[in-house]
Image (cartoon, rainbow, N blue to C red):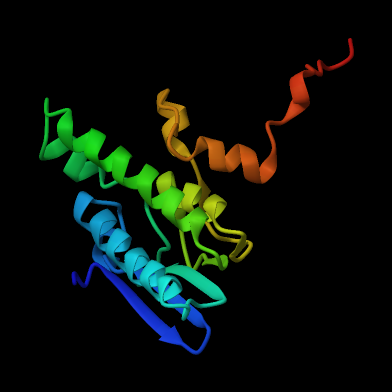
Length: 170
């Protein structure tokens, strides 16, 4: 099993960690595959009737997750649409599998959670972070919709405005 994601089980608590600290745990195809493998190990525990009560998601090093590995998407694969699509599909699959776990999922947000990383905090039942932490979707400023994780964000915090437009008086 790849060491790009780690799994530690202690009693009824499983901790799954992104393990690419040098890239702030940027989501590469390989990291998403490693995370899928670790989630598969947890799913197998449930199939045996030994699943954890709590699953903690975290990141190795100073960051939770920097989102998509832009170097892998843009620099290494200029003009290759297959790799970016594989990243998006891998993230979508991971979000669905995490949500389907019959355990409380806690995001232990130990540092920056950007783009897809921020989206993964929304997939969790509960996210714990600190006031000064950097979280968000900077891709929106570039006109890119965080489409894979946007449904989880809306589910977590609501659509906002509920169809009403509020304009300043005057």
